[in-house]
Amino acid sequence: MDSSHVENDLVNVLFTEEQIQARLAELAREIERDYDGKDLLIVGILRGAVMVMADLARSFGRHLEMDWMAVSSYGSGTKSSGVVRILKDLDTDISGRHVIIVDEIIDTGLTLSWLTSNLGSRSPASVEICTLLRKPEALQMPVDVKYVGWDIPNEFVVGYGLDYRERYRNLRDIGTLAPHVYS
Ligand code: PRP
Picture (cartoon, rainbow, N blue to C red):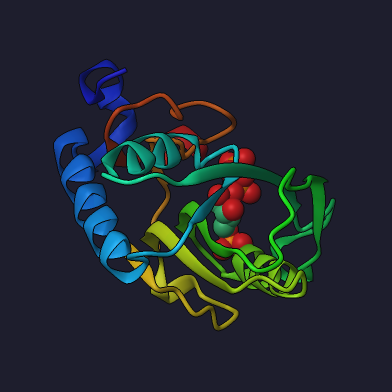
């Protein structure tokens, strides 16, 4: 789906498909340099990270492994509870492995902060984070993020895996959702 299909729902297009692909290619080059000679496992956090994982992985000019986790952020409560539950765990034993957690957005930081410490307790060689987007103004927990596509304002963004009530994930671009859609 292109932005033209939902243009009345968007305030603006923040990043086009082309800009996203170019930025992911840059991040892949940077990661390749940092992990030269090391094996690498990238872990995508379902469901939003599917697009980033697919395009980031294909931007690499080297072998890597992919695995997935699904977590329910914040249980049944609010974001501020900070409770994260694992719905689908890794199939891979990560002890001694170099791991990069891949997500599409860091908002409050609660999910990735919890995940980093959870995976860190499994004796990996290293755990780093790669996120396409980060909202510095929304951060509630310090999260050490090594690879960031872009920092963005604290606005409701959709597309490229990011949803509003499960819609817009299949939008090629990333846009700011118009308030009339969610208010
Ligand atoms: C999003 C995103 C992160 C989390 C970030 O997932 O993929 O995992 O929120 O938010 P935080 O920094 O406030 O913890 P979401 O819970 O929307 O699930 P989804 O990927 O299935 O859409």
